[in-house]
Length: 222
Image 1 (cartoon, rainbow, N blue to C red):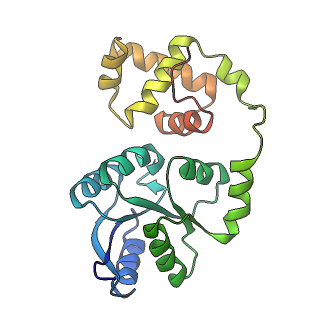
Image 2 (cartoon, rainbow, N blue to C red):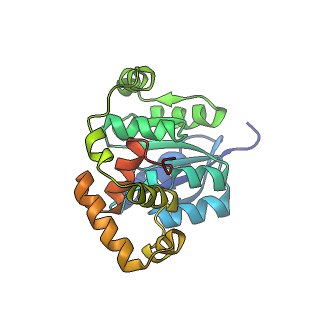
């Protein structure tokens, strides 16, 4: 390959990041490391600035889920994303595939598997860790089942459903900005969010985001 695959690494653990850097540097002339990031904000900045070919992304970044930024990351960078994570939550892993990730590889995978997965994702292949493949395909192809959370979701008012959709669309935007979009005062938004948290059994906006995306609450109901 005349032009190496340009890679951006995103992980909040310094030791893991250092190890991945060394892995890429020694992985072959067809791979080159163009940058690193350690949280959602720096990931978006670096991806937009560097325009890598492949982004190797951890799911948990300084206590926040990178699922929050995945659609924006894909749109801004034009890169393909490979998730490299120790998280085994099948629901979350299925969600990242639905949101556009081309690969899901365990942090426990051998070095050659990680490197070859990067190459495969760059080519446009779907690359999922073998131990996860059957479960992921089963969830993606299974007929829709009744959502056990339907009763909780149904307890939300149309106004609360709209707030949830705006929170998801906001990708981590501050409350002040969300309140402006909703044409309500910031204290009113905080009060509404508290009620929504109680109804859905979540603790904060990150958990609300994951819950909402998992249960298809990403648009305002008609």
